[in-house]
Image 1 (cartoon, helix red, strand yellow):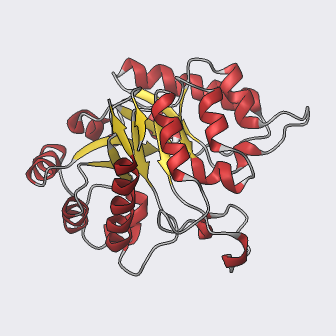
Image 2 (cartoon, helix red, strand yellow):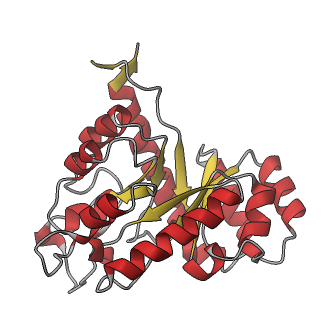
Length: 266
């Protein structure tokens, strides 16, 4: 058995985007279904189904769930008076995460926006993280990688690193975690289908993200590297889902527990 002495076993959350089809039907039942898989944390995505903040927190407490972070757009993150900030204060989540910023042609503007969001979020008592997709791995005109440049010119910014998009674009997720040790408190944990099983022409790869352990990403190596580089939490996310997404979540939780069983903490 491989021994890890550098970190306790990393807690697990799930990005609610993974159950997006169910959220529209019944938020409370979806959250209860997640709780029944054994998960204790969710990363928030979407609306609140008419719940007031206090009411929603009480329900989450009743099913032993907490909110680890919230995925939001830049407009909401820049406005501390926005509804998402109101709910985040009630939830008590640590992380506020920018889910997407699509202006890779203007690095200066991207950096300016990230710095301003970081200023607002930290001023409200949250830790801000930027979540990468595939387009951050494109080459800039000078030949450098966009994500590398963002790491370089925004040293105050933390990142939620998505291992699927990194792998889909042909890069080594473990190497990125090592290079940016201490800057990545959150990792989006997902798998990737091999090329001969990809039946669509997806440009961003999102159709190629199956359940954990059924693809080609070395999730054991990524988990070990995450433990060694200061990652605080692993967040499940899956794009390609079963008919009942809760079944996919349950399968992913079971596979994550198998990974944990490989490692011992001394």
